[in-house]
Length: 306
Image 1 (tube, rainbow, N blue to C red):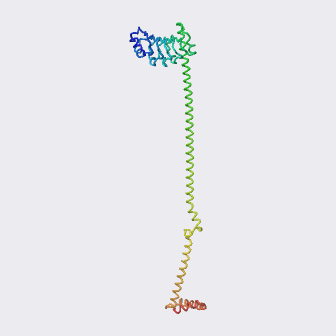
Image 2 (spheres, rainbow, N blue to C red; image 1 turned 120 degrees about the vertical axis):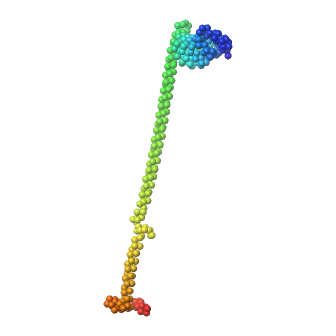
Image 3 (spheres, rainbow, N blue to C red; image 1 turned 135 degrees about the horizontal axis):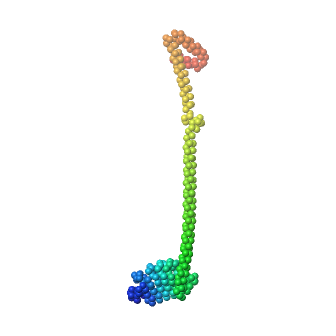
């Protein structure tokens, strides 16, 4: 790999005013760093070498005004070739170029261009035309610049169209996502409402069961006559039984009092009293009336024996 610095000596030795001639130097690489160190070299001749491409940093040589790249093997120019905004004269004769980079439209200072003997795209070749004299080469520069501006505008429109399509697609995705999220929110809301309704029904059922449970003791009280024995509603019979015993006790007490008074009237000194005489008379009459009954006679005999 041959470089100008090793084959032709120091580049400064080749600098003549503002012109640097590196033609016929058998170059297959451009010494960009050495050229960048020579900002005075505004005219650069790299014709008749073996260059197949230009490095990306070549576009940093913005001081170039005239550039000759004819009779090389260039297949394409760097994407940022339009950065050479001071370039006025460009010779690309007899290379292997098919298209030019879109940034070529930025070479607003370009006044002269030669694209002959390149396998150009038919549309670009038709625009470029011939460059057989100064006038044709200037027309070539002007027409190619206009053509590349149109290509750039078309690409920009296409880029905008793609961006718009992407934005529309993004909007659709966002709308779809929002619809999905809204559907999920609605589903969660409906599930929450269903859960709330289910819990409310359970709560109402529990309250109804509790009210039913509270009503049961009242029903049992109202149905006391039909309840089982030993329950509270059967307390009235013991109360009726208690009243009967009270009456019976009262009768027994009266009988005892009568018997005590009868005994007192018969065996004590009170028998002479008028009241006791009446009581004894009633007692004697009652005994005579009952003597006809065998059982009473037996009772009386037993009493007499005692």
